[in-house]
Image (cartoon, one colour):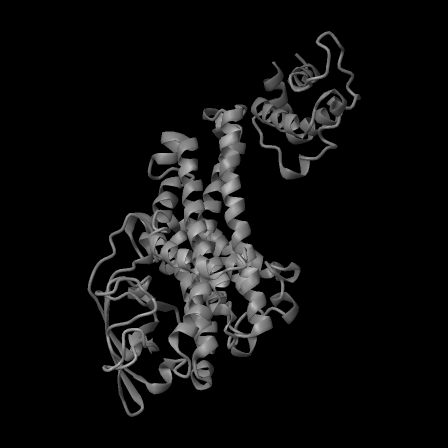
Length: 89
Length: 408
């Protein structure tokens, strides 16, 4: 699995309005598919559990959780590359 | 620590220019936290923590800058007490009650005593304990049995006190005495005694469930002080009590308890946010987060009441002055008493809920990294200090007098 696939799987679980068969575009706004602030906190905990790091306060913004791409960038900034590789295997 | 400007004093809480004070309090909190377990386990007075507090000028937090103090409001005192209590409830309680004694001296001592004492307190030389308990009357504040004997310019003290918070380690004492051998128990005199002026006989050890660092064992004090050490003899003691001692004392206690529970919650939340350590907790369960929300609600409720009452008290002091009779009004005493009752109940309840949620290992075992067991035992004392049952009887009667139902 790639990082993108792992992220997409975690994110999909928190998107109430995304049809099961729909493809998740990396630049689509996640809030349009149901990622409200409560769902974003569930996703935050999922991400922390998956990558074994605590997201610092400065990452807890709507920009971070805007799209799959912005989340991917945040993970890459925050998590050492070898940890990412280990987590997505 | 430099004095706050007059603008800072009117800030209801820390105020934007009080950043230095806030940084200092957080630094002290972290120091106190490193000693808290040892202080609790061994039941020792937190000498190291108090020394740090002395060094940074916090013994003079509520003293005016002209006497070398920081000149903070009582709202700010409440913020500092909460922060210190996050680290160690016992140390914060010792410090907060010291502030109560200092405020009483600053408000009512003769100018000559203020000039000699307050700069020494600001410089960190004097930590003052409160002596109000008495063997045959318990913790009642507005009466005293042991009489003060006045001869010429001196007053002789013999005082047996079963519980004195931090007493064995205090540098000085503020003592309630019966005004004289012929006076009624309700005719109370407040006397300041430096430790060098009295023989301090520690009569009983402090072996308690919690608040073990306060070392609040019983003392017998015996000695002589100059007549100007009798505080506020031009005013009756009831006025001193309702205007300064009781409001400052209840704000100080409430802040300490709320801060202690807040510290426990802070450590618990840090545990829950750590992806490695939180594995045992069902953070995705609605039931779990709903219970977390209940705890947060109790802490927010207690904090809001404390801030409201502290701000009201600061405003009354600056607007009406301490000679005013407004502090005796039923609505104000109801608020002050309710602050004590609600903070003692909510802070303990919050920690009790944390124990339930954290479970056996993190919540119940001694030596857990989030120290819930210590805070739980500390806060169990809150409803017993000036017992809530007694305050409720007073409040029920006061409620009948407040026809306008002036709520906080």
